[in-house]
Length: 270
Image 1: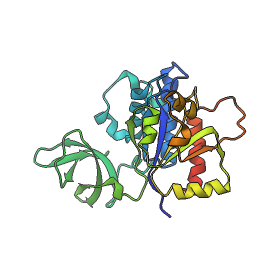
Image 2: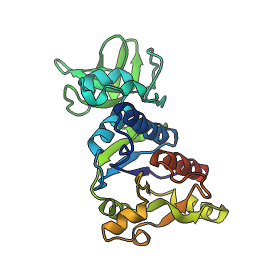
Image 3: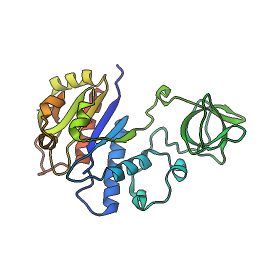
């Protein structure tokens, strides 16, 4: 049984608990790691009026998702990425460790030139020629497939045709209420939700065959409290409200901890 696309919806206040940029960077890196482990396709950052760090969160998430050999092309030196070294490596299929590609292998690349045909950097010693069925531009990130080893040549490829997990996309969205209204099916993580048992897991398994978005509250407030301030109710916007950490032993559960706990349970039936 094939699963549908999976998205997570996290708050712009994810980093509000610390002023230390190193800790903030690491916290966002944990979200990137969780998303990659559990094959999340999209991360939406909704705007929490209490604290909006959405641009920083989006930047770090995109940096983490980008293969290391492409970062020099796509991210200039900036203070916001000063502590990028604390981000845990994702080790996803599109972050290859070996530099010698094989025919049929997929890679992420950046177009580095287009004189007399396009050339692309795919993380080996030098640029390789790119066979493209459309116009590409210098600096553009592309997904390619290696179709010749000697000489080494690659062709543009649709990442949706790749049978492996191929990373996530990010977006900065509006308020939580508006973000949830735009989703086809919503699972909300809340301590006020239903405890996940066998019967609920069966229902969630069917839901996860479709495109599903899993929404999380902020470090300071639950998802229902945030919606209440917007004049919305959780029951009207979420198809399922679940508690994946019943009988928690701490006063609060951090957003990144809730993401790991919730996605790990959903992964059982996805």
